[in-house]
Image (cartoon, rainbow, N blue to C red; front, side, top):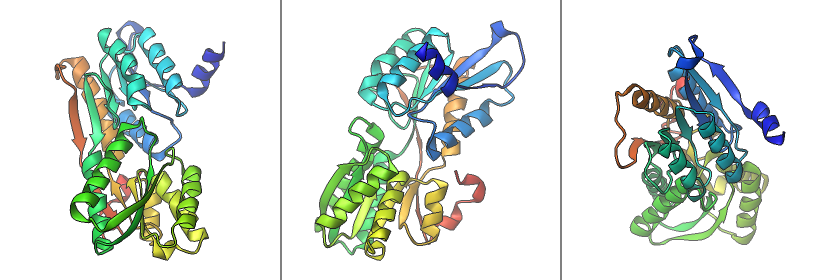
Length: 312
């Protein structure tokens, strides 16, 4: 069957301890895709936390950036009797029913970065809106309160990206009313798409002073396009997340900054929360428990504070 093939291809099953099969605790991880630095770092943090736990197995699946695949994979986790699911919803609305179904069967769901519309066990998130505001403050200050900026957006259903943009726009409106947002387009979280969008921004705007890309992949795409156009020294480019490759580009002076979060810690926090729920150390409440991992403004002046072992 086709489904069986992608299950074999996508699944990464790690037996973390020996024990009777009947006593095994199964924890599933379902990000938007396994092919990004952020989702890999979460996975590493989860694995490191679960390692050595008696009779715990861990399985990660790749939803290939498609909400409909993620819904099907959630059904598989539920039908296979997983004990807890760590989920990064591709689309908050599309995954809400799946989360409700899992929770209704007593399977706690811990979401990463993007929450869903109904209560569930927990959401371990970056401070998306606060960090977006922080980026807005940094860009506005660097521009002296005047200039043209553009935004490379997330898909509209991705609540994390929506919140980042909301925070950024709030900073512009409150602190820097003379800065004009001259464009905003959906970059699909993707570097190649961001190159295309940045090329369009540069062609339309003879003066473009800054770009906020709501993830680092898209910031790197914006940098590639600006460099190819010979305008990299004219445009301040900010990303979000803080992946290792972007930190290196900040050190090189090619990207201005990013809102860094320790993604290893974020994954580890989600895994620890799942274990605590399953052991009874934590009790599930009536509302989603939101655990916020604070951001750090990584610029050329501050990036050295992020140690090698914290770089993902």
